[in-house]
Image (cartoon, rainbow, N blue to C red; front, side, top):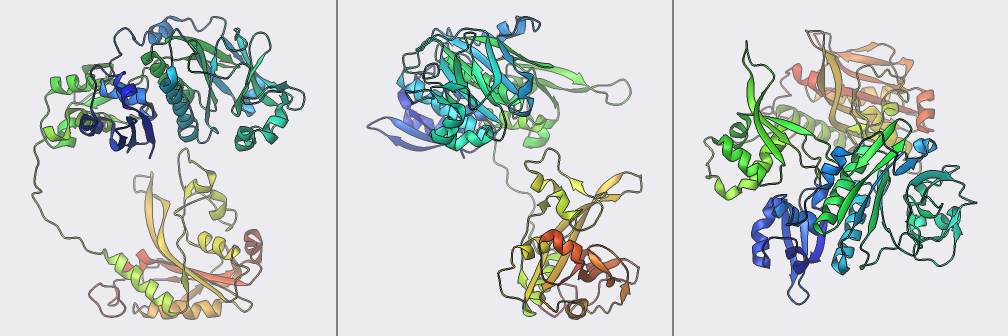
Length: 591
């Protein structure tokens, strides 16, 4: 969780009335934070935030803004939103972006902040916010990196700016903290920031640089600023702030947060227009995103009645810029659904739906304002029948000398398709996965067992592995649409010079015997097994309960396995459906 450090006097300077350390313990519920430490001698504090989806709170200014209910400080309105709304998108851009950057770092946005004073605490806070946004929200600068520059440093920055590609061996500038010029490649090889972040650009033949109208290099995004144009000090009154990355909405949010913070510090913010091939970005600006909250939802979520006017007033006092009562959609013939249209604050993007707005209403109203309600029913939990069966299967495997494996339920698509020789028609895919290695829900446990075996070649043979766990696949519904089918599977693998189907058939028979199952092996060919050396076991209704076979040598090559390997997989759900006398939690047998 993000941890914020600051000075209590600095925080109080951003509030309409000062708060004591004792007061902070009471009000931090509004930001889902905890008062972790306070030093009376230095008046410095630490706040731990329990919510990671609100980067606008990762600063002293953000905490103070939320405690003020989103209301600007006197004489410091967020007037840049009006200026952004009035600016014509067709005007000459303040920052031009080279189309060639689309494969390197495609987007950049920025703004000017003038007429304010940071001071030592403000400068430390700005740098801290910059680092937290870049490291956490920007995934260590891979998705977002922020640069802050004095407009009138050693060399005054002249507009318009250009974000362009440069030859890393020819282009030279003085990196931050150094005295002499170096080539871009030398900066990445020797500067601490270059060593840490240079890999984000070093794989490309040309690297991004930000330059002003005079050709002065301001920075090598996302690595390091220039010493001559990018060294900010506490006394700087005029700043230029930019953000680069792969997502313009993420860039806009970061710039909106920083613009609000600097406005709270007394700066006057001017939005700047960036343009690339086929896109433009004016920042800071309000995205204008709104959420519809059905009228009955607050009462259903909170379990008590809510006054519509109170709902509106409480949320307006929590920082929401606009709420209105209106209808949306249709409800029966000629009717409309009543509700609230809620405008999201320009410095937030965490509202995924109407329930998030109701949660904010709960936090803003205060937990103490709701009467406690005792539960009206008492229920005792117990193991599901399948868990009892799965535990008995685990006990049986362990008794036969197998080692249990626990692998991720999410996996990469090639691991369960190409590497097993299977089609991917029934795969459950993840929208916008964080990594292609976790892009689908596994439909089988065999891929996890083979992956573990591929990393075990240096361990003494024989290898005997098993796993019991969940999987998922698409399943056709009677309506013709596709639904989801949960699978509860158990799988085992043996690998050694004499591994074969006969050995695993014996293990499988012994396992099924514990559930009073006597099933016949039917020969069939199915991947990833060797044709003629595999088969299926079916129940009395013709449903497949298990597959067993020797892994095909071509599949073993794909996994890098050099020993003969055999495996089987049981559908525990189908085994439960048989309802034999040994699969009931009340029956005898293994615990």
